[in-house]
Length: 291
Ligand code: ARG
Image 1 (cartoon, rainbow, N blue to C red):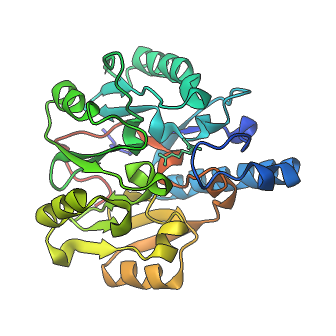
Image 2 (image 1 turned 30 degrees about the vertical axis):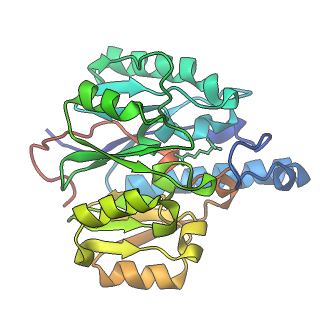
């Protein structure tokens, strides 16, 4: 059996930036030339898909839905591990319409045998999917962000649903509103992260769990380029266009980089990681995938 990583992406046909629920979102920039922006978004999304496929991954693409522009960020759809999906509950009304769409998607994936089980979040708990719950394959636990979007109460739910340790990290700023904007565990145990995004407690937690020689700190410029929001497969990393400083750090740490111009999506506050959702992640992989 071939074990190729499987990612969910969304057709960008209905993407736009028409509201503002994070400080990066620039509706005015989009409005200045919507058709050029949409054309650029389609190109960018296609290039990201190709980059993943080029690394041996499979990509399952779901259809666009008019009126739900942020559906292009399926990392927020659910947490998925060991065939179990915990669909998200979104903080802002602007994205809540995505919940029903993604639920249908997970039901269809279940019918096809790509997901085994769908579990419900309890009422009143916000949790924005894998954007705020990142599986650390080397350490075998979830790093879970909370604060701007996901509730602190989501941490114990994730623990119960997946039977895995959950290490909570409180996010200190509205600019780094999902954990995936400022934190990226890499194969081999290294972690790329942006220290200023975290509360003092969260920073102490990261530093207690990840020894210094495994920590790669992103600068302001690198974080603002949405480069921490990256997809990692073995020694390969796919991310938005990166400053030279970051290219040098990652090369020095032994990773090779594929850059994609994701600027249309950065106008909405998202990039490579959040444009994808890994569906086949196992807590105990039978063998290394693309090591
Ligand atoms: N405009 C979207 C929002 O604010 C962007 C989401 C990006 N997703 C992520 N996981 N960082 O919700």
